[in-house]
Image 1 (cartoon, rainbow, N blue to C red):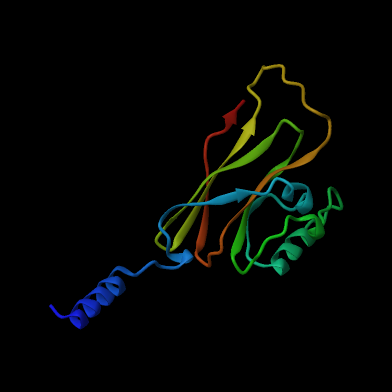
Image 2 (cartoon, rainbow, N blue to C red):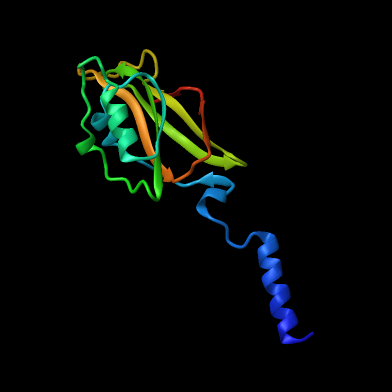
Length: 160
């Protein structure tokens, strides 16, 4: 086999395998970073699941809080490079300091990114003392930017 033939076959095999692929083509588990400070920056927006792909979408989300209660501030949201990352979030309502939410895993299969999340609550009857303040029970995380469909899957509550 000549060197030219070898290089051609090598290049062809890389193209057939897809090479290294881009970040939007990864399959399996995806890395994510929880953004704890985002909870207070977003405030008490309507209960639901969210995908934020730009600073404008973040501003519109924060502006959707029509209650005037626990207003958010986009300026306090952790910096996100929306050219590289998207933000996913879950807001399950308002509660006290003992209630929370966590993202357990983010994965990709085909054209769908799945965010697995669950509520976090004290063990019933544990006698845990919670603060009186009312806070949004939400969680926000940055993930590699994707234009794929994002599906949220709620898991069973984790008691602590």
